[in-house]
Length: 446
Image (tube, rainbow, N blue to C red; front, side, top):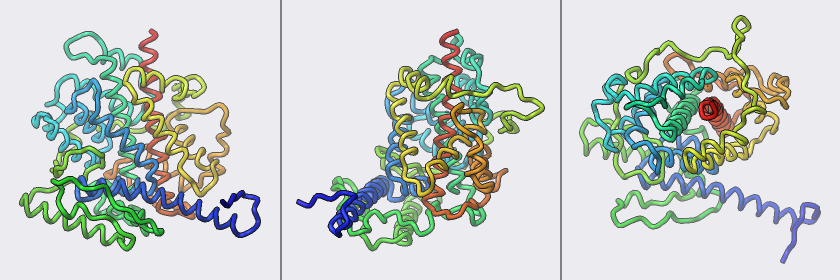
């Protein structure tokens, strides 16, 4: 047995350290490959959002687990309601990608097609969510106890507290996902976008099946007897991005031949989805919202600085939000907390202070402050171009109105840009949840 320590000067120690690092790298690559192969087995293609997140497999697992739980597992809301709420949330940012996805999913789980004619065709209970949806999406600091009280008041169309909590979590999840879709260029409107966006959502130079590289050899889980032969193929070390895209293209051509001129949407990856093809609904997102001019405004302008700063020391996720949401919506607190911890623990090639500055800057533009943080660090660590990019992705993720500016932050690797987009998404998610859960707490103790 060779015992290696960091203090060893001879080459055995160096070799052992190299082997240990190689094992860690290969392990991460295997996780990414397994997730990608599971997507290919389920769908025969990989959606662009999952392709982007696959560069961080540790986070991707946590994200998919949470999303699947919110949309498909036990909860007070019926599944058609969940997908319709997701449509409403995505419509606030005119995200055709998510609106199309959840429109198809809505019908698959038995939703009434008439509801897709617009918000006015939906049940009054869903229409009543429109205001809090609008506020959380653009100016979450306006969320108040009165909004919660109005939704929970007695009557035929009232919400239960458990239903409302699940709806709020779903709204916040989809709002923040719109930011990631916008930042990664995955929206269906991005075909004609300028070069800062990544074509087909694939990071330059990144191979989704790169998990099999680095002398790692393994086979995918045995396929079931009903699976088609092409879906049992493993991803070997010689597979490149072009090969994968060609496979996806062939799969889509086969689908088109079987179903004529029917279009198929790219779908968000989740593990246990039925093996069906997604039909695109080119529904206009504006059908599912009111007051389209309502949008983000600076939290505290000098001439109207009447909003109270949200101080984390008074109400935090760890001490207040986690326990409340977990009590009213079983286990979701653990899943959300895992997401926050996962993105915080992702390896970042830059200073940890930079990562914290990005997170705190996003919270700051949403009116959330940390008393123990020196906000001079934000201006010192974040270049102007990076700040503009973060603010556009967090606050204005609408491709119709906001051109995505280049991330002029050097050095920028594809995985670094994805990392920044993940930080934006998770920080925004937590900010919306904090405002909503604080309002619910105020209602409960009133």
